[in-house]
Image 1 (cartoon, protein in one colour):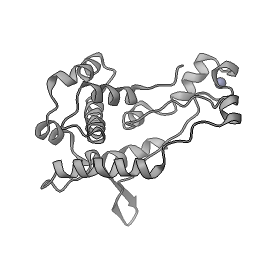
Image 2 (cartoon, rainbow, N blue to C red):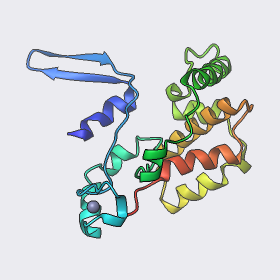
Image 3 (cartoon, protein in one colour):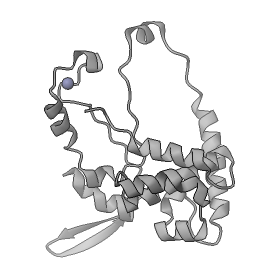
Image 4 (cartoon, protein in one colour):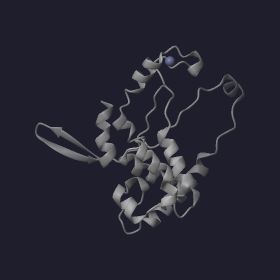
Amino acid sequence: MLDTLRQPLERGSVTIHRANGSATFPCRAQLVLAANPCPCASAAGDTACTCSALERRRYQSRLSGPLLDRIDLRVTLPPVTRAAWLDGVEPPEPTSAVAARVRAARATAAERMAGTGLSLNSQVPGRMLRDRWPVPRGSLALVERALERGSLSVRGFDRVLRVAWTLADLAGLATPGPDQVAEALGLRLQRVAA
Ligand SMILES: [Zn+2]
């Protein structure tokens, strides 16, 4: 069922077929998925987990490879510790400060894409991204190796590039460097330990 999300995620549109015709609707959504690392999902995390390695693998495989290939940012969240819960943690950065950074980064991206009819890194087709705004070869060593090893698909390669551009826009850089490419790749390859 989840796999039916693949097409809308890729194309930014969803087509619904019915007996008397079909209709296509725009569907540029930001998809956020959350999952437990295993079926028992112990509140204490791995220390109290009673699942076997096989059970964990089987549970995690319910998110298919092709669907995961379209998820650009994967973040593993550790369980909240008792001390952090009772004592509180440092208040996070206010949303308004983050929003200002995001606005500035989006403006940078829109300026770069002026005249193309696009304004967001996520909208740029892979070929256009590679042809029009090539990232220096030296910055790509890590992703090229991941592609050769098979830990990254061709689609994944373009998706890493888009995230790297966003990180560069957030950092106020003219082009992604090795650090932005490494961070984008790291966010993509994060996995829950089996
Ligand atoms: Zn478990």
